[in-house]
Amino acid sequence: MQSETKKFMGIWSGSVAVACLALMLGFASTGYGDIIMGNFESADSCDGWGPVSWDAANAILTPACANGVTLGSGSLRVAWSYKYWAVLWSPSSVADFPKSSAGCQIKLDLTMYSSDFNTAGTWVYVGNGGLNSDNGWGGLPEATAVDRTTGASTAVGSYFAGTDTIAKKTLTYDISDYNMAGITWFNFLMSAQVSMGSDQNEYGSGVFYIDNVRLIPPTLDVKKCTVAAGKTQYMGDSDFNDMKDTFTASGTISGFPADLNTISHIDVNIVSADGNTIFFEANDFNYMRNVKKNVYTHKYKITKGNPTEGAITSMTIDFKKKTFAVTVTNADLTGLACPLQLIITIGDFVIADEVTETIVNGAKKTIPTRLMRTYKDTLFVTKAKVKNSSKASADSLSVNGELAAKDFNESEPNLYASDVVITWRSADDTKNQTFTIPKHSFKIPRKGRLYKCSKINPTVTPVADANTMVAASIDFDKCAFAVSISKADINAVSGDVKFGLKFTNADLNDFNEMDNLNLALGH
Image (cartoon, rainbow, N blue to C red; front, side, top):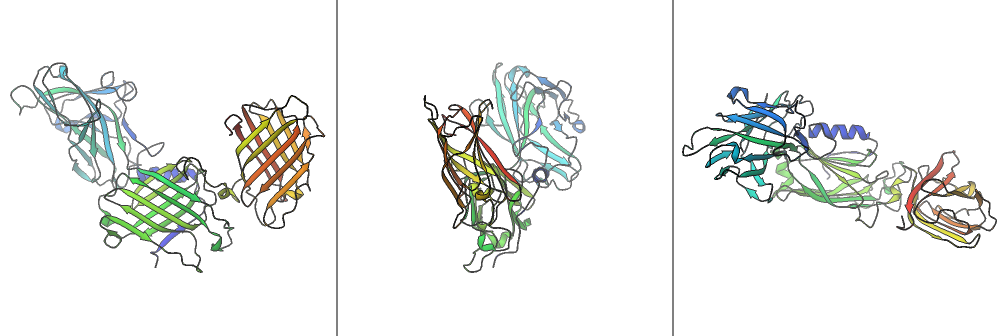
């Protein structure tokens, strides 16, 4: 039996979706990438950084410095003496902080110059950190360090044997185990130690520079994704036999909640380019029951003869290898377009990735246009060709592509009862032609919604031409069209152009779509 699930297929405002995701991830962000905690561009602001007053660190902070800059044009110069804790970051608000810091890291770029320590044989260590809030103190594991010049792992501490040495490092602090739930204030602290000469136990003084301090939230990286449209389409009539769309995705996850035993559910959201949630499912999660050898497995079988609404039929998460795979079948993915969002929620731990056309179905195949049928008027040109002649009324134009109509049911669109207007114009709109196929030109389909016409003399603007002939086929089931115009005088014959189709349904809602293309590139 399938574990108890919640499924939703409908509308979720794009702004609400993004806002909710940002709230759960924490920190104000324009996307799902790094969140800047310190950039130090203004001489009037330290971006929330200051000395650790209770340790009497006597630190002097100077922003907008020219040394050690890795982001923008300024860094933060920290001159401190004799105490362990040097500086801390205190944000102005914690309203949007994450409920869980699982998988989160803090990175910063550290630069030190031996000339700032006056003595050869100086040992400097800037690598310990701590978090403090109304949830209490939490010391962090020692930072890891990467040499910014070579990209190789390096020691956190630096030993300056000469007077012209520069240390350039990126430090990474893992904050996964700290409890962020319900906090009202928050500090991130950095320590600094220096010993000079033979007395290695003496706390000395010195200078270091930091820049590009950022919180790195855990990431979801979709490596492969396929979206397939079924031959039939769900029409909202509770006949789940019409749900035949499928979705698969696989890739990597950068981090997980520290204690999986506290997780009770795993959710999957598939959100379209316009911000609407197309598919949602929440599955019960029990670590002891669902996880074997570090791998979470969910399986559900849709039995033949017992159709059901779309469901996750397979999902695995390897908590050791940090990989995932999910398959949704028998779904209604109407409205799904790229770039889509895949959002996976593990308890309060939310990760997301934006998936573009280059990933979905591979770079050479687009997401099915049929998914736009009943949802949004859509037109997309896949191929266009103009043959230009020096003789009058001897040009030809052929255009192939895909289209979908929002107003779609058993009787609509009905091209037999509608004029169909073909538009061809230059990108700057200076050359514009229309070829109108009059109503009753398309044959009424005996089966399905494939409309065809041939050898039709259209009404041509701006210059009428009795010689022009049009043939066209528009298949609303396969969401494909082909238009051929011959014996014409085509005005726009090269470069960037526009192609459009317009027709009217019985309820007077016009289909009026246009696509931009380049004749040299084919689109």
